[in-house]
Image (spheres, one colour):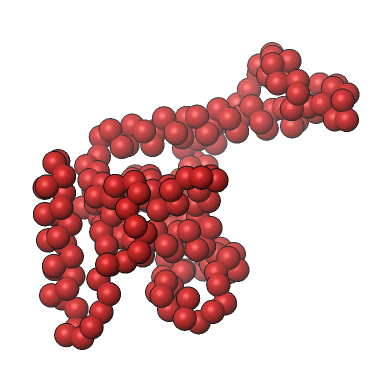
Length: 215
């Protein structure tokens, strides 16, 4: 899709939002991406940053980093919806919503700007738990043999050195196994999400360096 077509698409979505809104002075949210027909807006990015769903590395464009995260999250959510894992319990959703809430500002005006009503926060919490359940089910099989653990220990000796002394494999075997399986699982998940991106219709309308404010 060309930049002109992207601009036209974004303009059309924003025009529809404006026509559907009550006839009063309002701020129109900026559309940053469309993923599988689902719109990701600037306010979605601000919410993801505010509750700590994504923590951009130092020096990174926070809007771009959060948008990339939300694109991946939407692609994963589409897969989760296809396979319908069991819904989390109300108690689990409430606990996760409380965790997200603790990251938020206490200023009522800041909360109002984010538009984070209780229902929206619970929706994020429920989505988080459904994704975690699906990931655990799909990638929870990752294992490592004793030989692989020993090789990882030798190749990453610095990670198991304390006060200049390399800990024995016997003492850190569980830690080595956790690190190795976590790295493998993360690599498999990253490749899976890359494949989802290749197969999905993803239209990114945000250009790095654009101002992060609403229009």
